[in-house]
Image (cartoon, rainbow, N blue to C red):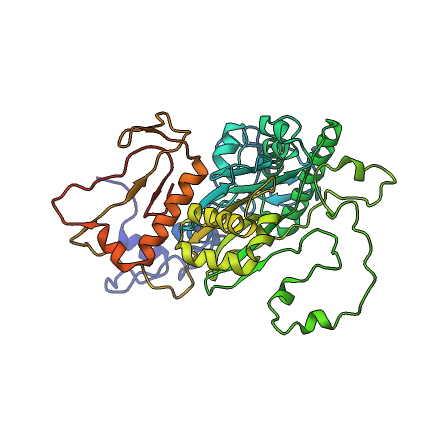
Length: 485
């Protein structure tokens, strides 16, 4: 067995009658033998560890590829948290707030890295230039992010969709040289503008404020004009109208024309005034000779940009930043000669209504209207770019309904040959096709408007199910009922 004192001996040692066996034995504290260090967890709160772990903030995981850096660096870092840097992406990360930062050389400070947002906005764009407008150039980049990848630039920090549209109306160059692309200011700008603008957009990966966008555009225009002047080329660019169309049918030019007003010129609002009160209220003034150049801003025009030249032209543009809303239907870029010939913003609004969301048809209709009014194109810059905006829904916009299935089949394609086709022989009539591409498009637009305007003509295009849909022969210019070319 085990040795040790017996219970009766313990009671006797504690001063208890050893003959009383039913007496309760006192504890160590009752007997005076308790010491403070005998208590378990002495000096601790006794709170369970799971509660303590729950109150602690979770440790932020350092992103992959980031290394800690000292605060004494070339770019002064804010004095909060531990900073990390990724050499590959050239981005800073702060452990205090867990956010990414980039260095902005313009403000000499760190800006939060902007995460791009994808919008459900759908953009349809189309352009049309008259065949005689040899000095008009246009640029349409439907996806600027992909264009940046081709130039080895990252534009992932910019919201989508991201597009670039530009229209250039050239003047003052021999038509033969303009057709070959030699000495054309419009041709030079169409090739160089986006190559100077995209690096500026890729340099700063924070949130672009309106003032920053305006400054980037102005710097791009000034650099492009300086480079063109250094090339000692002749030629110039004229003014282009930018018209914003609303869903309620209204249209307005975003900026006034950069031109010197002549005594015979009238404002657009005065053209709409039928009683002529605005014109008659003007005091009579002596007619002065026209200025040597009407524009106040342009690319080129080297003779009016030298020191001491009169008048003195500028290349710095007026920049307008517009936030798209549900009320916006689209935008039209129109050459100034075409814009003045068709009746300005009211005519553009009418074309937007009649084109039913088909941008290529709307752009061609604007050119056709100018030809009809002027009688001939000559060497005028007749060209336009039309952009339609869809899915800019308001806060209470109802969901889109599914299209109803119809029991009839429609003829969707109308194809017409022109002399730029690979095969220019009309096999039906066995003749050589001599019409130009522009003439073919004008014929197709007239057919489409006639079919849509006459209910009987629309029914004539429908065929019964089971019969084979026929096409008019062939290749080249085509207008679908879906609005694409």
